Length: 168
Image (cartoon, rainbow, N blue to C red; front, top):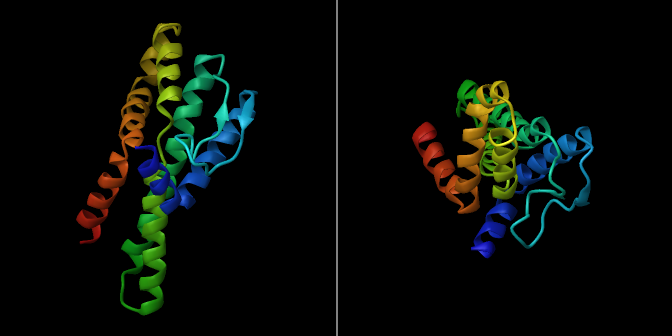
């Protein structure tokens, strides 16, 4: 399973780099210790930054949700380009193809590691106050479910199905 996970991360390397960059930025903002900042590796941490767990619920939520949200915004704008430009001329087709591949790679690398998602759920729902539980609930559930989907490479399959449905 790790082999397939790493192969997909290498095929979708732009998304892996962007996700790890957002992750690194949040870790610096929360002053969390980074243990290894290599973005592409040959293990289950490929596309992520190895780090210590964040101390507060806000930092843990930000580590999981901010990269997801920023990737989602990037996906929207990258898929907007082929929808607006169309495929009338060859340069537009090539640029549209690159844009769709980049959006696909962002989608495949949008979600956090399962360990980070579990840490977020523990910090928010076991130790957090009621306001945090209410405000963080939608993003926390999306990130938690998405972490499981990404761990078993289901996001890759969902991404392919999405591209076929949108552009097929």
